[in-house]
Amino acid sequence: MPERLGAEDRPPEPELKRGVLGLPAVVMQSVTHIAPALAVLFSLQLAVQQAGVTAPLTYLAAFLVVLVLAVVLARWPSTSLQQADTSRM
Image (cartoon, rainbow, N blue to C red; front, side):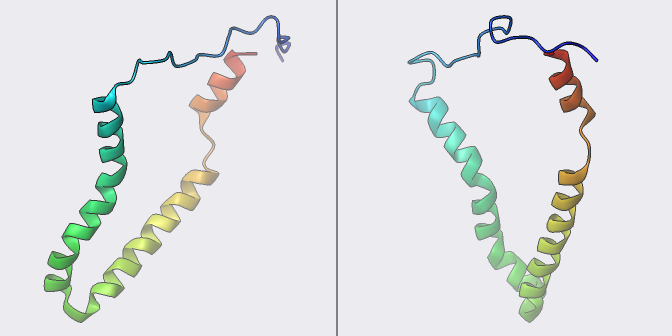
């Protein structure tokens, strides 16, 4: 097992310089965070037209699929993250 580096041996933490991100970059980041919620909101009418009264059931089924996927991915060991952590030691 490799030895751990002391605080004086570690490279400095990266920092974001002042003024690097402008208004367009911040707006685009905000849009990309809001886009999935807006997609669900705007597709709701189409889903209700196609599924009728069973539309809530389709959203419940989709929620369960995403929930199972999230649980599996949260428990999945990420070898790339483990390699990145051990490469710093």
